[in-house]
Amino acid sequence: MAPKPSRMRIGFETVGAIRRDHHPRADIDAFERPRAGFDPDAFSIEPERARDRRPERQFRRDPFDPIGIRMGSFMIFPEAELAAAAYSNVFRGSRDPLGDAALEIRPSVRAVSMWSRHAVELRAEANTSFHRRYSTEDDRGALLEARARLDLTRRTSIEALAAWELAQETRGSIDVPLSAAERGDVETRRAAVSLNHRLNRLALQLRGSLAEFDYGPVATLGGGEISNEDRDYTQQEVALRASWVLKPTLSAFAETSANIRDHTTAGSDGIKHDSHGTRHRVGLSFGDAEAPLHGQASIGYGQQTYDDPLLPSVEGILIDASLVWRLSGLTSVLLTARTDVDETNLAGAGGALT
Image (cartoon, rainbow, N blue to C red; front, side, top):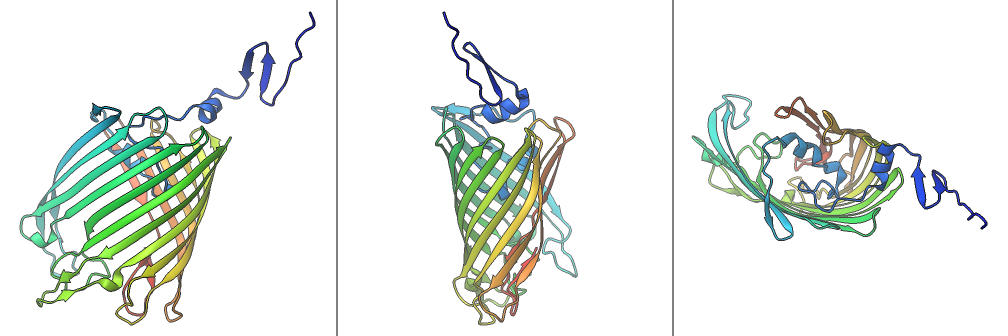
């Protein structure tokens, strides 16, 4: 009987019905391992990689993390945190600092799918604080968030995010009026969707996002009210990110994005602060959940140009980092840094690099 003809493909050797891959085992695992459908931390649902939350969640992990409660095809993770805080300058003033103490309560619950394909995560959080002397500084925050991942193939997926958040402005912010008697509410609504595709070592992400920022009215020390309508704005953004896997625990990436910001009304200077801008970043993502040091860091350049020529453009170097250093199972250090062009309602100023 004549022998069967053999076929050869790059990286493989055909011997009967057995194929041997000559790539290192680490590379095989990185590129051929099926995606996990069940992920308690939903690490794979990250439509906005610049806001990657994985390092922070790894920072908060400890050996006593709850294992969750099984409910049908979902795992439920309820949690509550109690904390005490002391402030030497609760109003963050430049003179005559006033101290205070507060009790902080942060309940939360997450529901994560356990499907073999696709993934869904639902999250609800609350952030409340009770100050002993100055109740105007109490926090009354909340977050509702939904994330989803649709696995089209092993290498292609669509990810989406929708979130609503309520928080209070930080004392000492340059845009907070000096006459404000309380901290104003900031309501944020965000939606994002991304298309992800992997080609061997190359990973591509195309994403778009929409965010609305609404600043609530605040009472003044004189009994009046500041509407803050001139600070409300909407931001649209589109971005393209490319990552190249140097090895399973080290990736280099480049990202470019463009945005448009539309304000509801003109500012106190009579100028509408509408603008458009670009961001360009390059960086490294390294380590994994078990590595002592992991996270990502990038450097880049950003520019925001205002439609009204009376407002100067804002541009500068962007530095972003989110790094976790695990000293032991119970001790870890988190380093975060983020630079961007923020909006301001100061007369004659378009924005500020912060």
